[in-house]
Image (tube, rainbow, N blue to C red; front, side, top):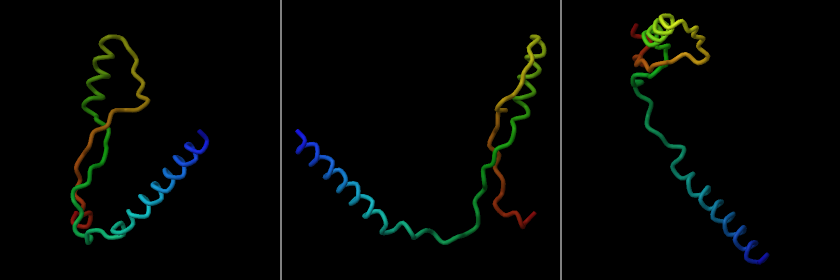
Amino acid sequence: MNRLLLCTIVSMCALGLAACASTQGGAGYGAAPGPQPTQKIFERDAAYIAYVERTARMRGIDVRWVNPPVKRVARNGDSEAQ
């Protein structure tokens, strides 16, 4: 049983090392840098926050945001053009 376990561990290590060694062939190559596409940034979702707080106020509930909701906003990658 110990011999089988030892063979299994050694073969898994050898396979793991072989897999890591084979991924470095093209890892350093990438596309040439070009114009940045639109970036997605996160902003607070003010409309949703206002809706929830208004509804809570009508029901007599106090809302405290621990993690306020956010939404993705697309921004142009060229900051120099502005």
